[in-house]
Length: 158
Image 1 (tube, rainbow, N blue to C red):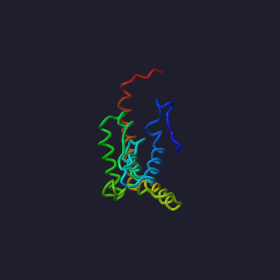
Image 2: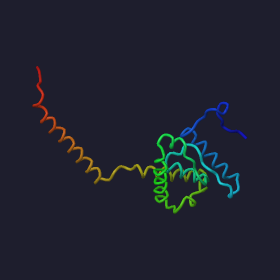
Image 3: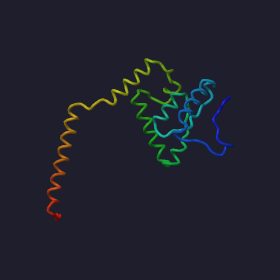
Image 4: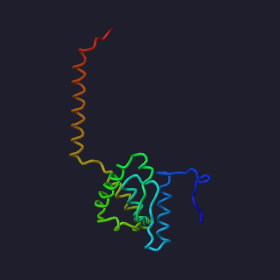
């Protein structure tokens, strides 16, 4: 069976660099193993979204390595909070509801995903735009006032 390994076993890739390979491996292992055997997702887990993706591929649990090394133990609370928020947004009650639910790629699914991404990035409503414009005007006015107040503090040489 082909695999990815380091040079003589002493060094290798970690973190984001291995995430997609790790997701594919978790998906493949979940397909090949009986449900009673747990699959632990390892590689590139830094956010609740990452955990969600590993769960979709069939992971029963995940391991956080590089992120813990960079951020320290506080990363666990952040990742758990992000995952809880994401599960709620997507209408899932628990991690078990997500495990192994990855749908195969289809044109229709890709189209839905693109539409959802576009909707999330939509231009702000006219009320928000008005607020942004008024904030820009306030910032400009404050800059002019500060410039006028500071102008007499400096001597300009001709």
